[in-house]
Length: 486
Image (tube, rainbow, N blue to C red; front, side, top):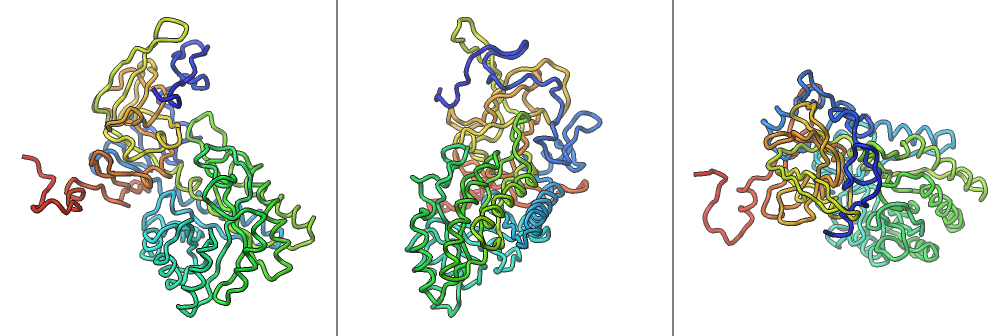
């Protein structure tokens, strides 16, 4: 087994399985839905089944199939509105306006774009496809920011022609491409410059995006010269600096340190011309497990505002207008994944100190094709029985997928009722961000549907892919192939 999947075998509290991670406690109630992790409208129905926004998980599975991603629309909307308000409330007393971009890479659909716009967010995209979707969904181009470390000439041309509000520059080559595209279109394109602040965020190695040895941004000591080059181009307007230190960050200190460093550069740049704004990105963490305690968005906003205000006062400059780019904190807790159990298998595992212990493997009808985060980031999730309540004793489980990989894991370790069985539905909360977005067709499995639920009604956001969909792209098939079974 890969090292990342080995939990330390150490002393546990009474009743805990010795194979469990040390900080995983046996739940006092296996039917409880911890509000710290689940969407705001997740409940247990009268008969014990999971309901979301008044809809029974069993009915949703019957109507839309499994695996299934269920998005609590009211929850997502309220988190978007709360985020917009939190930053506005933190910076308005400082005389600065704020703009919140919803980071579309977390999860994007036409309806989600519309929700975000209606709740006061702009939209952040990072590819031609995301840009096309945002525009098709009705997002005003002026409210779109375009990211990416390797935007093609084609993508830049499309973005400039559409009139996007800002393009984030990530290299010297991009500056020349944007300037040329804007000149050709007869436009003056607003740009931000992504800066590698050097702040080492406390997160997984692959989620830290501001360390020195990685692909994003311009080092701080090269910013002055780069901005001078931007200002030489009449077809480009310099908006300000951009920073993103990483993702799934719980501690506000890293954002404060990044603010301190960027305000210092921002103040220097004012000597050469206007710098109307400062964009400090996103990356705020959420709770995937009941024991996790991320900083709430109002505290985060207040902490950042304090650092910006103090730095500006120290340097004698006005607080600039601010921009932020949260995604996970808005859509992540709003999503729940539903799976049907296919098989269960008890595995006896030798212990380092002698003897053995049992782990129950619960195989579901999805896996790494719809949620690769466990394999990619060693991400952890919790799980609960969704189709019923149970009074059975707890069993340590590993929820695994149906793919031909030993690392095909959905939930590394949690407790479920020991009577979990084939045909049961299980639910994994906090799966609204970076699950469906990272999905694939590995083993020729179609990506699942995504549905929105609100006030007892469900509607499809993204339909499930069928076998017909998958085969339709294979140019080697001369005859039509359908999903129909003999």
